[in-house]
Structure formats: structure tokens, C-alpha cells
View (spheres, rainbow, N blue to C red):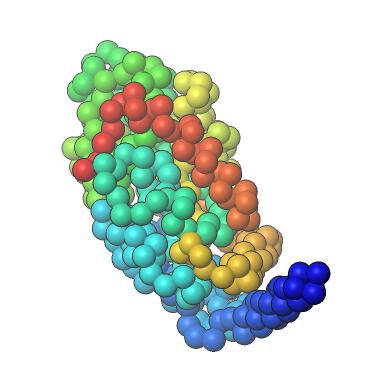
Length: 325
């Protein structure tokens, strides 16, 4: 009985010490600048949103939060860098659908597990994709565009930011649902694709970055890929209105390497959700120049969201035999 009592006392002492250490860690973190890895090239709308967050988070934590671009391999290079890095809370990851889900479902080889190798802290929001054509394109509505595709199978070409991106998957789902034939031309980003669209070398582009061209009257939005109509273009129908079940959004969140101490992840989650929940931040992020639909989901809801994305896209990817080597 004495031995059992002694062991219990030692265990309680250890737990007390651990609790004190965790409390101390939460109070002292961070003690140095934090790096936010952006796995895409500079200049995207998502990066503008992340810079806003980084500035606010730096003020809340009283340390600078600096964005570091590590593009490559459809955003998986920068993502792998964080997965294999130190789990100390000083390297955050801007997490995207292309690097976590459904993007990773298409890779034959990838250097990380999108769920097990990360602690997903918060979902910032989603970006709807816009189906756009030139202002002088024959189709004035999404119904007219689909009619052209059906009448001329395989001759209509479209661009996305690459295989595995939301724009590509939205088109693939549309093709599967309506039995369409369109030719996909991948680009490394929206800017060159939009240039070629305006030059007449493309028929259609699926992108989240078109607000300025729309304002200038150079392109026409025919549909949006989100579940609900966009507040930026309330008169434009969703793809789901003409093709039930066809929906796809880009999304961005914040994650860290797995095994990052819980006091740190809890503190980061609390501060990020608090920032995203302010009316000021909501207004800035949802501005057409950024185009984000803020969601502010904490860790548990973010993981649930990722799992739903995996479940939704797995059969689509299998049916299309979509692979990225």
C-alpha cells in the first residue's frame, strides 16, 4: 500500500510540474520572430490576406510574423518543409487545398501525410472560383457556354492554375456531371492564363483572381463555383444552379508541424480566431480585392472540414483517374 501511495504521489508531482511548465510555455511564447511559410509565389490574393493576418497576429503576440515564400510542386514543397521542420511553433504554414486535401489525393508520391504530420490550427476562409470568358465571347450566360461545349466537344479549351487546383477540379466535376468534353491547359498561375484569355488563345478560365478585369469590362463572369452566390457578383449564378452537385472552392488555413506543444497551438488558435472574428478583419478579407469568404473555424472544425473535403473529392479523382507524378 505504501508503494502504491508513493507512486501516486510521484505521479501527481510529475503532473503538477508538467502543468506548471505548460502554463509557463504558454505565457512566454513567443520569444523570437515567427515565420509563416507561404507555399506559392508572391503576389497572390491569398498572400495579401495572410499579410493582414500576420500583421495582426504579430501585434497580438508581440513578435513579428514574417511571410516566407517557398513555392514549388503545386505548393507541396513548402508544405513538406514545415512538416519536417521543428515542432516549436516558430514556423507556421499557410495551408491550402492543393497541399492538404484534395490536392494530395492525386499525388503518387508525397513527402508528408496531410493529416498526421500537422496540427491544423484554424481555417481562415474559402475562395470561390469564377468561370470567366472574354467580354466578346459568344456565350453571354453559363447555359449558352455549356451549349457551345456540347455542340463542339473537345474544341473548347480552358485554363486553371494547374492539375489539382480548385479550378481544375471544378471543371473536372462539371465534365463528369454533365458528360462534357473540354481541353484543359494548365498554367503556373492566374496572370498568364488571363493574359492568354484576353489574347484569344483560351476560351475560358477558372480563377479566384478576376475582379479587376471584370471592373474594367474585359472579361465576363458566367458562374461561381461556391455553394452560394458571391456577394461580389450577386447576379451571377452558381454552377450548382445549372449542374447540381458541382461546387468547389479554394481554401486557406494555418497549420504547424505535428507534436507542436499544445499550449502553443492553443494560444495560436485563440489569437487567430479572435483576429478573424473582428468586424474590421471580416470586412477587409471579404473585399473584392482579396475575395475571401471568412470562416474563422478553430482546430476541431478545421480538421472536420478537411475530412469532408477528402470524402467529397476522392470519388471524383478516382473517376477522372487524376494523377500527379
